[in-house]
Image (cartoon, rainbow, N blue to C red):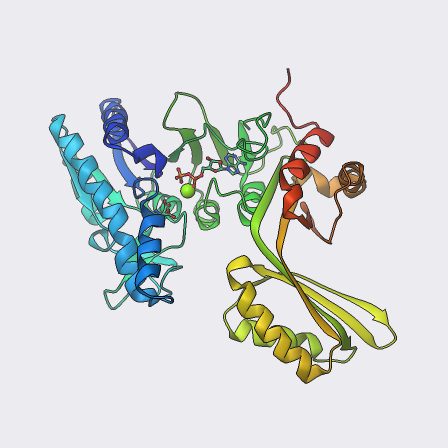
Length: 406
Ligand code: ADP
Ligand code: ASP
Ligand code: MG
């Protein structure tokens, strides 16, 4: 008998009608002879609603209390789904993260899963029940409720699949697989049959929110077969797998983008050891994550230093940089929070030259100015003005011939 873990995201459980559809799908999977664990998100819009409520009460709500609040969204869905299953005569049990011992560290709002005790779930499964688990949450060693960061239900599902040694982890969402780029931005995007863990990791870390990056990391580390499917229609979805020699190796597998970036520049800093550390040390001490970093020599012994941060950290980072600039005797500080990052991803890049120039030429033809560039083995990222995002995505999609054959 196979054991499968299915996960349904917010839109897939966004109404009572949708919860009924999910209940029917689960019963079918169970009747097909599988043991079934299901992880659900909060109903669509609910997590955002709770975040807004918290902000109405406090500018900077305490991370601990925010987690107590946010975890309630998923608790509503597990109870409703279990009721829908039982009404159909299917025994089921719902559990919060803490109740199935999803033990995390204590980093509220972005906790990492450390351990899961699958024994209670296994007992339920062996008794013929469907196990319904709240996504996105756990508890720390002291019993405090924690949450795993936005999109964290994906990670709950994969972690449960690893702990229970499931045969497959199926992520049901509102698109029918992983596409060459977000199909909401480029309708001609093509669904991929398969994508490697490596490429999916890059896509997720560069902004494709179809899977939370930690879910992909976990699946890779514990070799959990992972599939993305639609909860709205039947289909094979996209399998995320290890690279194998039989896989077609397209040059570029996808285009990712991130709208949440902001750019800061310190002009005219002295070209001396320790300057980068003094600037970025202050940023790191404020717990602000830095993404791209670029330094170039502008004149003799004078450098320009540029880096990007998450847009929500922009104001704070700018303030800190202004202080540092004064201390260092820099010329000027510039900032821009209307930029986005656009990235090309593909393992085929390793063995092919000329991808970057094709990319830059295509963007230039459309008059899109590139502000920053960074590359690694299987990706090239550029920072551009946010108003060119859609045009940039479609231009690259066309230039690299990624569309559906028609
Ligand atoms: P869920 O609530 O089910 O977790 P999400 O909104 O988190 O769903 O993720 C699904 C969304 O991810 C899609 O609706 C799509 O707009 C977006 N997306 C971004 N990049 C891609 C991609 N490359 N392939 C498919 N979907 C993508
Ligand atoms: N409900 C959480 C969110 O909206 C977790 C998830 O859906 O994965 O981010
Ligand atoms: Mg999601």
